[in-house]
Image 1 (cartoon, rainbow, N blue to C red):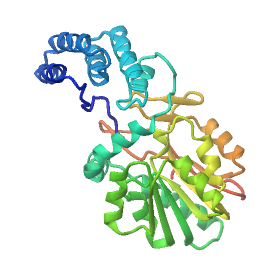
Image 2 (image 1 turned 90 degrees about the horizontal axis):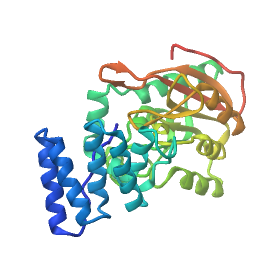
Image 3 (image 1 turned 30 degrees about the vertical axis):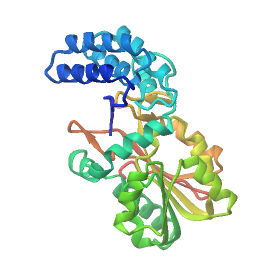
Image 4 (image 1 turned 45 degrees about the vertical axis):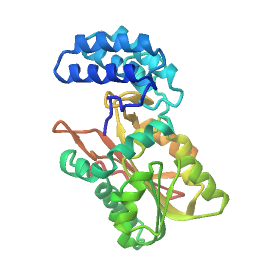
Length: 322
């Protein structure tokens, strides 16, 4: 899922709000130059109107004015420290500021709360999402190779969303716990009745609390979650601390041909294979499978990805067909 447009937050000035609405109407009719003019007048009236600055950045970008877009997105960022609209991501996409800025909790929560009601349909029908199926297949392969039964006591679903991942593993889990930052996504997951416990929290905070409580999981899942994390190493390390001795960590990633971490034009993060291997080993885990896998399509083209299964020990199994 991507989100490049502004979600309206009032300036507190009725005239400025009306001008903003008028600008969007002009843009909707394809008159982007006029829309930009109106937005420029709007931010002159209310200089800290982050939503209008963000919209102006998007329209200038559409008009082929990257320098003007950068200037507007920078104003949006400076007017909104919580980065509600994701201006820092847009700046990074345009080559300005941090190359891989962290998505703020406010931005992520707003993004997924906004899409919660139609999330399942959008992923499965339009993006042909198959992250949970890929994870289930990968976990089955690793367990079969180890001669272990396909059953887990406690399973933790990181970034559980509406419960698509949990549904794929419910039948082989005695206890299923889900955590997600967006309350509206948690509400959708709760409605499915498949989780024993659901928590709305930031992943690192939740994992820290679970580790302090000595909670242990035989399987920790992260399906299409780390594309919204600008550095997975700390999260992987935190997940390792809640794994049972024979537990598994199973997750999907988007990948790229370069080095390290990259912010894609879709405003999602991609990881190279070498970075993931380093992060897994630094967490004290062993990669049992690291395979090429595409969990979704975009514009009819499979998105490059990886599926990873790691554990506390065991020889690695490579399977590039998973």
